[in-house]
Image 1 (cartoon, rainbow, N blue to C red):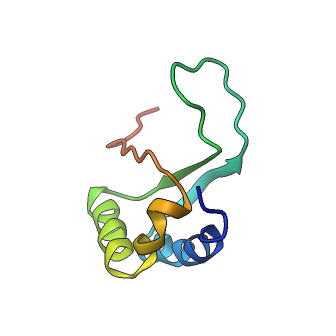
Image 2 (image 1 turned 90 degrees about the horizontal axis):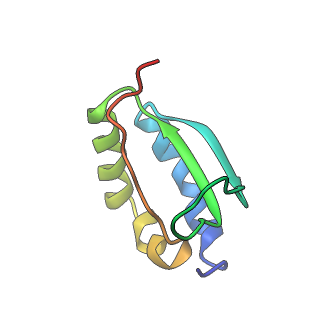
Image 3 (image 1 turned 45 degrees about the horizontal axis):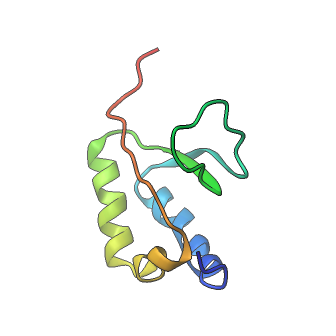
Length: 87
């Protein structure tokens, strides 16, 4: 993790989320593990998008727009997509 590169990455992502009609549901550092079978991330973000097309648009824009250049060293990530949550 390269903390010096993280601010450049994180300042560009919110606009890309908004362009793809996404929004933050949660974000924060130092999560509390109730039960964990692998490494606990240093920070977590949960995003919501209206549909898979919006998710795809977000990642396409992110990859084309430059932030992805600093992403791998700025913040290791595990990215998961849930198709939908039914309550």
